[in-house]
Image (tube, rainbow over all chains, first blue to last red; front, side, top):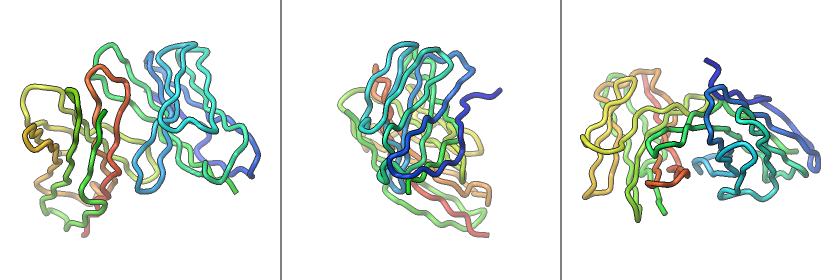
Length: 114
Length: 113
């Protein structure tokens, strides 16, 4: 079982460049999420989606965009990379018909902006 | 809204010793509680969850946690740790009817041989 797959695993960007972090899940989950993890801060929600075509902002959305054209894929776009976006990014998914469904996480994308 | 406080940022412990990782939460609604583990350079993996019912919850790898409503705590315990338990542990809360998880800042467990 692949679960949640994130690509790439590592990336270095220059300030002002753009890139897309890819996330795919094969569990037919309707909910998907993007988080960023900074040292000593836990995880903060960037964006989430409750199904194809529906996305909404989380706690820290500035500087990011998302789309959800299929159930399986939920890419995260950085348009103008800034040093403050250096972080580890995690994608997660869950089957949200009941409150007790846990989120399943990918292995992360480690992004450095120089 | 919820908040989660993990009282220790780092916990060193000798191999085969017991360990307790402390977590307190606050919430204005009914809350579900989870512990996730993150091994180095990996994603988060669910250890255990408390939804309702018995306040003692058993998870994977010999871990257990006890939900204490009066003390608003959900501490994680293991009677005898192994080197392989070295990881970062996150206490997480989810309000009833909400999609959103609230993470603690994490506790790094270091098991010393």
